[in-house]
Every structure is written in C-alpha cells, then in structure tokens.
Image 1: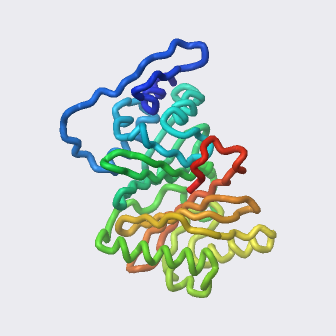
Image 2 (image 1 turned 180 degrees about the vertical axis):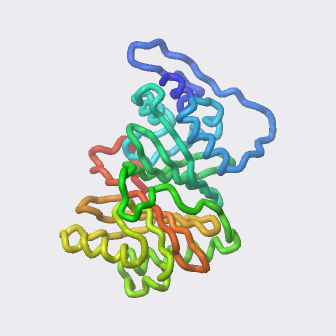
Image 3 (image 1 turned 30 degrees about the horizontal axis):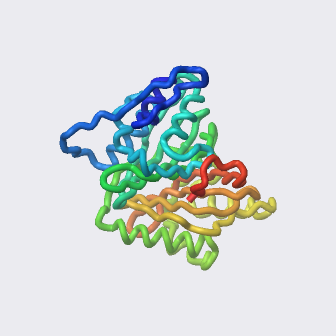
Length: 288
C-alpha cells in the first residue's frame, strides 16, 4: 500500500512512510503545458487513483488549501494518506458510476471497496482549476434490497442540461416541503405517481413503497427526520441534495440523488451515514 501513499501524499514537504521508516522527500514536478481536462475528468481520475496508485491526479489538488469534511480523516492530504496506509494491501477498489459537474463543484456516485464494500457520494469544490475542498457520505453496500434494485443500477444518461436550474429548484422545494415537513401533502407535485424507481435498500418502488417504509419507521418510534439542507447540486436531469437529520434515532447525513423527467422525480439513490460526536472528529471542519 506504500504506492497508494504517493497518490495522496505527494507534497513539497517531507512525508514519513511509516513509523520507524526513513523519511522520503517527495516533490511535485510542474509541467508547463495547457491542462485541457474537465473538472469532472480530474475527479474521476483522482478517485480511481486510490485503487491504481497513479501519482499524477494528486496534481489536481491544491495541497495548501485542501479542506477535508470526512470526519474520520485528518485535514489535508497528509490525513488521507495516513488512512490509505491502514488499508490492506491491494484491497481498495473504486468504480465511479455517475459523475456530474455544477459550476465549481463536481459530485460523484461511486462503488467502493474501502475498508469493506461501500456506496458513496463525493463532492469536490474547485478554485482556479484545482480541488480545494471535499465532502462525502458512505454507506455499507446491502446484499439484498426490498425493491430488487441495487444501490447503483438504473439510469446513467445525462440529459436536459438546459433544465438544470429548474430541476434543482424542484428538488430544493421537495426537500423543504416533503422531507423537512413544511407541506408533506404536496408530495405528488414532486414525485411521479406512475414511475418512481427506488434504490434505497429498505424501500420498495413507487410512492406506496415510500409511504410504507416511512410509516413502519414511525410506528417503531424511529421516524426519519430531515432538519437542514446544505447542498443542492445538479447537472441536467440529475440532482443531489445533501442534508442532515435523524434516522434510527441517530444524527445522520442524508445524501439523496434524484433523476427527474418532465419536472417530476422518477428515480432515487441515497446514502445515510451517522455523524459522530465531535469528540471523535479527526478534523474541525464539520460534516458540511
């Protein structure tokens, strides 16, 4: 796994490979040529480098400004390099299933093997063509789902780029009215009554499936509550909402990816991750 350290820890400073080992001095070689890759391409290459150990994509990160919001990882590149050093050799796998770009942000939906199989959403913020900030939300991959769909299958084709802002506003209002409870009776104004494909492992397809799952949680004394929305990012027919709230009586982050057709939500993927107590945080940047 020492090769993986190169990916996240090529800094213009000394980097200790492991306790008791000799310190190696790593530097970034500047290339004086035009960079033509999109922000989306840079993120995909960077994520894949976790698996391959390719050191080049680390040059897409501004090492002096990199802010980490994964609370299990210390700030900066050094923090993530330390986590990678703990991975079993050759265990990391990364498959980016969906990737989208919204202004200075790129968000991805990724199938990981990272200390076990995980479904993940990542958000990266760029400044001057370099990554300066990262948020994510991870959940264990389920072996069985109520709907029969996986946490990754379904539509991937990006369409309706001209409707990006309209679709983002539709999701923003859905989160406020339905998920946060301002006007739950408006649910059919946001979700299609004929097609609603569900990739949450515990929820069946359709509005009936969603209603049944929410009712069962409420009866069990563990209602799902959304208390704040922090991000709504989108490209075309796909929109990601990052929120926080309560699930199974725990403080959690909700990342919900929606696909829209003709102004209605027709497909949904998500991850739900518990937010640890502040005493357990490895950085002070907060989950959001």
